[in-house]
Length: 318
Image 1 (cartoon, rainbow, N blue to C red):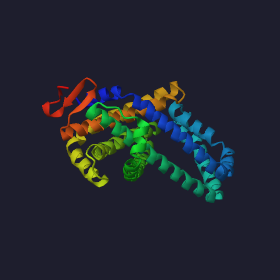
Image 2 (image 1 turned 30 degrees about the vertical axis):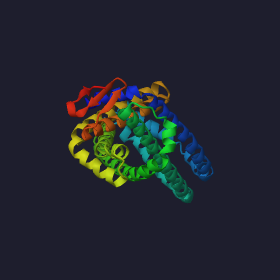
Image 3 (image 1 turned 90 degrees about the vertical axis):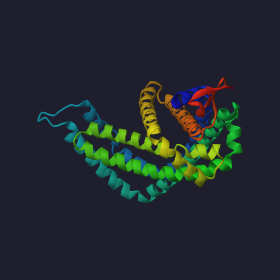
Image 4 (image 1 turned 120 degrees about the vertical axis):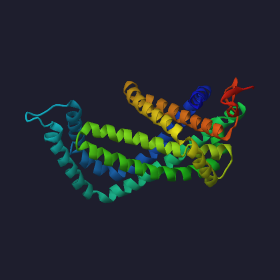
């Protein structure tokens, strides 16, 4: 019922997908220009030296050997002989070049970290706007423009986004460590299997993170709590809904990954924005429906139907 209603709300408010995509594209353009203006003069010499190493060709040959499955006469895969040795040699050369440009690299890393941090904060401010717009629709079947909502709640959304991004960074570090560790361990037996394990580990870890914090933003928006109060309310909800939401988010993230790969190839990357927009709005709608059910609050799933969780998930009279 919750999943069905989430899709219904997504369809009813599908315009949010386009508005979110536009907001992301504008931010990417602005932050991209700022990043290029900072990094181009700083790292131009380093990039030039790396290009002389032909790293792209070396990596391409190595990946081709893995997925191509070709074998040498002695039965050992090329990925573990010539191509592998070339890759190791390229990595050593990268290390040598990197040491020669260490100062510029650290400056570039700091700039990239700051830009990514600011973009992530802005992104979750957009997600707050999506959540608040969904709340307006679900609670009263009313419209609230994306831009006007964003501007009206910029202070409140910024406060939440800074707290959420702090948690998000910690999880990204954990997820990255798990993926790399398990990927290398399994990759020692089979390279392709190592990549598969790394991908599924990332999806599972992202689903766990989402399930653990699914109620944080809804509690902050719907119940008008402080950041800390809404976090505590989130964990209370997670103790009852974690098992159900984990499976849903794992499927959603897995489907999103598969769609991104297929749509990205067919549309030369442009379709990725649609997949991201739909996935994000759907996840926010699912969080909101879950929270409404947890609190026993009535909500509109579309302009003709109101759902009352207290009546065993039956439609209430509008």
